[in-house]
Amino acid sequence: MTPVQQRQRTAPAELEARLRAIGPERYHHRHPFHQLMHEGKLTRGQLQAWALNRYYYQSVIPIKDAIILSRSEDAAFRRAWRKRIIDHDGDGTHPGGVEKWIALAEATGLGREQVTSLRGILPGVYYAVNAYLDLVSKHSFLEAVASSLTELFSRDLIALRIDRLRQHYPWLSGGLAYFDARLTQAPEDAQFALSWVIEHARTPTEQELALGALRAKCDILWAQLDALYFAYVSPGWPPPGAFHPGAESVSN
Image (cartoon, rainbow, N blue to C red; front, side, top):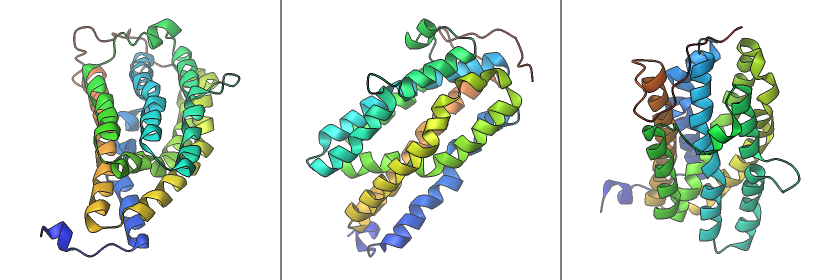
């Protein structure tokens, strides 16, 4: 038997504590790119690069959720999970998160077609986002659901981001509807996924898979910011074909 198989099952409260402990250690709120953003030290061009590249991630979230939905044989799970797709795709009448992210990108000065065409996306961002799709489609269903648990940590980051973007980049204020909506959506989604994971991670091996999937998702988010930092902050080397912002600085 492996050391994991020999270990006794973690009690639900302890598993939850272990899952929640991953956030302070590995969530991307600690990344230097986000630190610069929250300190008001990014230029308009750097914010444009962030909004443009992050759009690729935002655009695949409903695809990711549709993959997870398609893998479930539980009607109750599917009914709960499909809300996520509507939250991001909209319902045909009210805009969803993807459309709201486009509005944020436009607030930075980018054109809609420039954003939705995906021209200029960093290769590192492509690889990281596609790795997320691989995680939810090729790994176990438990790992796919557990990977969404970064939402446990997102509300505090979103609240901070809204405050700091309004403070340091007031010209972005009209494009922050995405974050306003996620303040309530993310905690609701996280609570459902957390309860499901704790209930279905029944063995030590399954619990380690759930923990590993959450760490992997944190790595995917971190890797996207690594690519942005390298290309647009230090050393500032955008690869061929990538978006090249102007030198205009943010006016506070």
